[in-house]
Image (cartoon, rainbow, N blue to C red; front, side, top):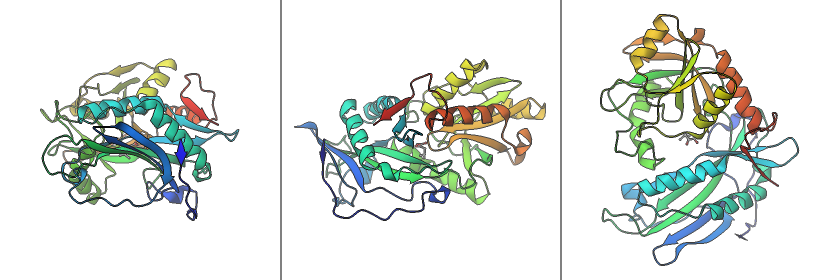
Length: 353
Ligand code: COI
């Protein structure tokens, strides 16, 4: 893989939890181009510097673009581990298909990522709760205003050393159930990781933040009845000892931390059910003292306890606003595998030497 070196390296920020999420970027990036004539080509690692774009470039107008979120962790033996990257490449190609973006060669981007990570090893923070966040993205780059799939694309991977996704770290989050706006509809793009999904969620997110909530808990678009996801996390509820997570009905992102959590929980003997779960069922369980725990899962959010849910102006506190036992066990297990503190019986750590 070609590497174009830069003359001077950037100054690094303090590599601790004050990093926040997505504020700093490393020295290099991976890029690869697509044209109808050449297909995907020109894969290389180059300095991460601003790129000039014509303002008629289609990504700016119709948001034909997709992304992924992954993390790299420095292991106790000094090697680098990426958590289940093959799952992200496969999901990204599924998102690409939904958004009329040509599928990309997964082996080439994996080689690009590994080259990039080896070059940027010093940017992997090691303080508790920190990691090197990986953001692979594809944007439509044809200069044209017609509403058609682009014939040119740019694939890039940028890296960002991050702390906790939520400013308050592992403190349980507060969610507000959104019963007016919707995140995704059946037949829409909810299960693709496309740019527009996130833009469409911002209005409700802003209102929620003004009211002092961390995130919005989305309901299904049709009936405003069933829990979908949070936008940056998939949701899990522990009701009477059973772990329930919304089924992937087509409008929910198929999270990789979600999938990993289901496997860990089942292997530890918990009953995990993937099914539609209504917000009324969650609230009823809370009222009857049967809602033991709630948590969200995601690459950025990891395993985040949920301490409070507001629905129709009433606040429901979960597990006394504290992290529950199952949530804590899952957090320890998933992060233990990621950071190399625990054995990896599933082969989820992709080790880069
Ligand atoms: C992730 O967890 O990686 C996400 O993409 C969620 C959010 C930061 C957009």
